[in-house]
Image 1 (cartoon, helix red, strand yellow):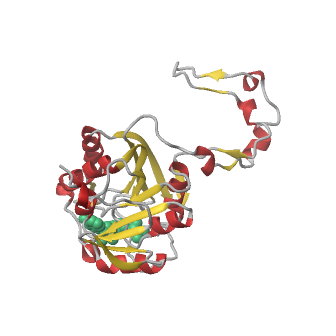
Image 2 (cartoon, rainbow, N blue to C red):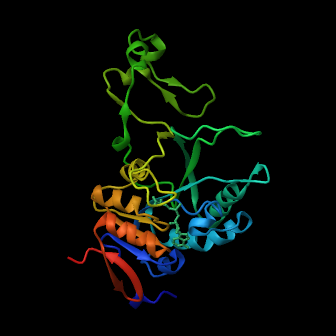
Image 3 (cartoon, protein in one colour):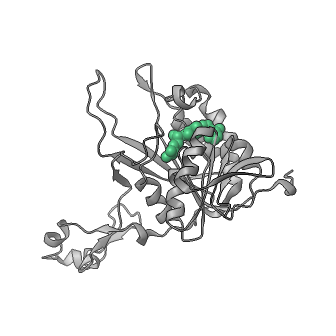
Length: 291
Ligand SMILES: C[S@@+](CC[C@H](N)C(=O)[O-])C[C@H]1O[C@@H](n2cnc3c(N)ncnc32)[C@H](O)[C@@H]1O
């Protein structure tokens, strides 16, 4: 039973210094529009901020995701940036197991976006090539959720000039899918358009202006999802906020950013980036704007 006197209302940008499982338990249900986060990739960075053994990952994550499911609004989205590490020469399956376990918990696995890291470092490995992509798993509570697709449209590109120049008869009518999927396309609809919807592969460099955290997002990554799944004034939560990248971007875009971070030094970095000061809300250390 939730103790209503301890409930946290998320109506302004703030960073909680604590374990996300504890903090989430005190957050109001159905109060968040978007969760965008990158948790520890198992124990890949155990020397900097600890981690969880791959075999224990799902059991560690599920109590947290249960709270995320509770605090997310029915129209909200949860974007989980993660990548499985190599253990004993093969890819570990904890991310795949986590997807299945999250579905069992009630999440819908709507989509998988691939973050193509354009500038991954060259190297030579005996049994694989350099790792140039990460998963951004998209989960929802319901099939109908808020999505502002026009906000992430991209230029049509040069291909459209030649492709749309001489349209065939088929191009001028709706071409129904041959496999009976109900989907179809009408190429003529794209005549005169300058912008198109992007694909589910996001091409972005890993570099970021903030070098004080070993695994910080480039700002463009959370920015893309925040524009796609929220509007001004909406609440964006990052339960593993690290140096506060997603909270900073959310705030810059006129959203309410709420971060949770275990380590004091990472909270200090976030607070400096966002101009927040340390205070206390109920029994928690929180950084917020005290002006
Ligand atoms: C991959 S990093 C996130 C980096 C972040 N996206 C950024 O741009 O800086 C994961 C973060 O989760 C934090 N963390 C680990 N376990 C946590 C927990 N139980 N609750 C809150 N934060 C945790 C770590 O200290 C680390 O800063």
